[in-house]
Length: 186
Image (cartoon, rainbow, N blue to C red; front, side):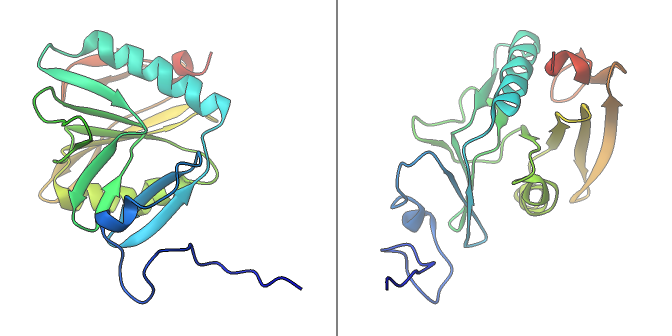
């Protein structure tokens, strides 16, 4: 009878993980992220998720100024020595990314909710991005469809815009953009 283990070979036991440990993860189609030394593993996104991601990236790309760019996951955002995440979309100044990662908090991080990531996106990632000083955080729920935008004020995220279905969503920061959530899920 074979014994089953939950340990990943080669990972240290009994200590928080670091970004160096994250580099040893296999290239197997899963998304490996590290939040405060805790490994988060997510399956590859589903088709609906990918469609929303692509449509939203086009909307953002068309609206952003020349000194800002939109990048899609997987692309590492290094927030600390024990925290590297891959938001579904990030918006950053063009001079900040390296070929390998974004070594600073993005101007905007966007997560597209799914059943397997909802809790992490709404709690852990949101909190970790706030602590890193990410000025804007958006969450898209493709099932409603809806979008909520938070802005960092005094170290806490506050809701600055929300929209559901055909209702317009509009913000001015980090740059002006407007659309409806239903446009993302056609």
